[in-house]
Image (cartoon, rainbow, N blue to C red; front, side, top):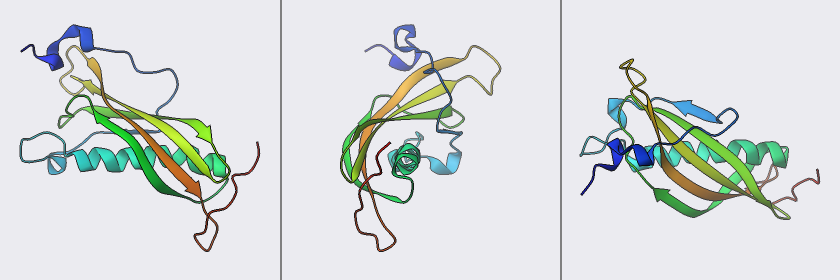
Amino acid sequence: MPDKLNDPTHHVQLPEGQPILRMVPMPSDTNYAGDIFGGWIMSQVDMAGSVPALRRAHGRVATVAVNSFVFKQPVCVGDLVSFYADIIKVGRTSITVDVAVYAQRGVREGGEEVCIKVTEAVLTYVAIDSDRRPRPVPQE
């Protein structure tokens, strides 16, 4: 079986524009196998997805669904992890966001830098009022 992490056909470029979040996972974020714990990635994805949702909602939002979540490649300690989020649908009270996650490897070593897509997710948020009840998303 080929080593997908070192296969140049899996290397990609970062998307245009600035990421919503950029993080470097630490050793304390690893699972028993030494890879970054999936729950850590899920948490960061939820935070990244909430940023465009709260901007579009002009206020508070709550996560109501994780529509899809795919771990494509492992994330390693020291990777520079970038989270990109785009709104793909706006409903009456809901906002659906696509989140793509990329890892840049080799940044700290100063050698050849490799970029791979590590995670894809789609989440739905609902705009909520001060009583935590759904409210309409304002028109643009």
